[in-house]
Image 1 (spheres, rainbow, N blue to C red):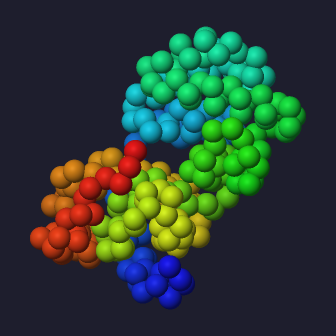
Image 2 (image 1 turned 135 degrees about the vertical axis):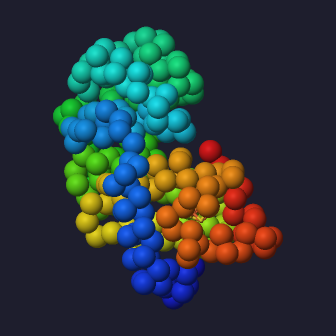
Amino acid sequence: MDEVTLDEHLPESKVKWFRRGLKAWAEQCLRDFPWRHTTEPYRIFVAEFLLQQTDAPRVVPVYHRFLERYPTIYDLAAAPVDELAEILRPLGFHFRAVHLLTSAGEIVERFEGHIPHTEGELLELHGVGRYVARSVCTNAFAQGLAVLDTNIARILQRFFGLPLSRARARNDPFLWQAAQRVAPKREVGIWNLTLIDFGAAVCTARNPKCSICPVQKRCYHARHSTDAEANALIEPSGP
Ligand code: SF4
C-alpha cells in the first residue's frame, strides 16, 4: 500500500474525530493495572513479556510474584529455568520462560544490565517482537511509537473500513503504518492503552458493543454490517 492509499483510508478529519471520541471514553473507562503506574524499564519489560497473548487481569498476580522473586534483571538472568517456568505456569506458554531468561542474559551481557531503549536494539533480543519493543520504548522511554496487535488491527479495520490483509493482521505493514498515523503526536502510551482497553471492553472480537460505542456514528463496520466485507472484519485475524 502506498501513502496515497493510506491517505484515502485515513482522512485527517475522521482520524481526529476518532481520537477525540476514544480519548473521552478513556477518561472514564481505562483499566488500572500495576504496570501502568511505573515507567521503570525493567518492570515495563517484564510486564510486556507476560502480557503477550494473555488477558491482562490474569497477569496481575504473576507479575507481583515475579517481581518479588526477581526484583532486578540480574536476579532474573540468574534464575533456574524450571523455577521461572513454575512462576509463569498460570499464564501457559512454556517458551515464554525460555525467551525471558535468554533475553535477560543478553541484556546483562550486551547492555550492562540496562534495558535497551531503541526499537532496533530491543528487536535483537530473544523472543522480542515489534509489539513488545515498541511498547517498551513508549511506556518506559516516552517515545511516541504506536503498537499493533490483532485487537488493535480489528478496531482500525472496522472503524476506518481498511482492506483486509491476506497476511496475519499484526504483521501487515499497511496496518502498522495506519496505527502510527491514527496515534496522536503526544501521549502515545496512553493512546495505545486506550485502544487495548477499547478492544477488550467495546469493540470485541465477537459481538462488538456497537450500541454503546462512542464512535459508532462514523464507524464503517456499524454502517455496513450487513455487507459481506464488513462481516468479515469481525473475525479475529490471529492470536
Ligand atoms: S461501532 Fe462497533 S464495530 Fe465500530 S468501532 Fe464501535 S464497537 Fe467497533
